[in-house]
Amino acid sequence: MKSSERKEILGFPISNPIVISSNNFSDSLDKILKMFDYGAQIVVTKTICNEESLSGKIVKKDLSLFNTTMYSQKTFDQWLSIISKLVRLEKNIVPSIFARNEKEIVYMAKSIEALGVSAIELGGVCPNDTGSSSIHELASAIINETNLKLSVKLTADQNYLEQVSSLSEKGISTICISDAFKASSIVNGKIEEVGYSGASIKPIVLHAINEIRQNGYNGEIIGVGGVLKNSDIEDYLAVGANATGLCSSLYFYGLKSIQSLSQYKYDYWR
Ligand SMILES: Cc1cc2nc3c(=O)[nH]c(=O)nc-3n(C[C@H](O)[C@H](O)[C@H](O)COP(=O)(O)O)c2cc1C
Image (cartoon, rainbow, N blue to C red; front, side, top):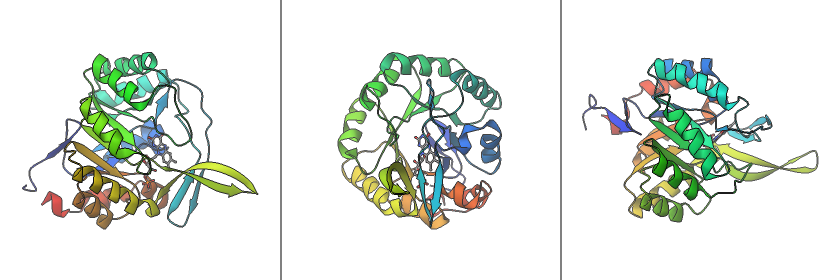
């Protein structure tokens, strides 16, 4: 493929592989706009859930992150207003949403679709929470009730092969893998359940993507986990990801690091 040729993810033409994975910087309009300015092709919002959520904390250790954040601190109505601004500015915004049942997820998805959004992500595997409807039931409800393109977020330390084949049967053609892993941290002698991410999860996510491809999945894959430098992105593209999601790198190197990652000429893009 020639470098001038643009690729696509979730129906958005992209000229570099940089997607911003859901995180706490993507909980703010200003920061979302900055991430686009620095060259991000798609920004996935912090997961929006129509219920109250604790703010949580984010601890950095070496090149890993331990986070106990849950859902966005903004209300759904606040998000509808932010999203409509981004749509008016023609930004490739992908709201990440989660709900505990099909009725609620369809309400959220339809309200977002009505603003002119074309794609959303289902962020239902947050390590800090579990819903009552399965990710498959929620995904099917969105596919059946809306015309939105849908990315489903999976975790690379869970039964991803079964999940991908069952989601493919339902017509889902974009997978985002991986969410943070479920892990435990000992804080002042107490066990704290955290989401664990960063450099150390990358080899496990690469393995998962390789297995998913070898198992015959030919839909889109956004590879996420420990993408900190150009060579990490080359590695993800080499195992069959179509684009890569940044999260930890923003905490270690700042939003401006998006600029150099997005300007680099990746082999896959030549
Ligand atoms: C502080 C923080 C907040 C996050 N919030 C969300 C979220 O709301 N929804 C979601 O699907 N993933 C969330 N994630 C997971 C990231 O999108 C990403 O999948 C994961 O951290 C792996 O990427 P990394 O190794 O680059 O951090 C969060 C991660 C961190 C560190």
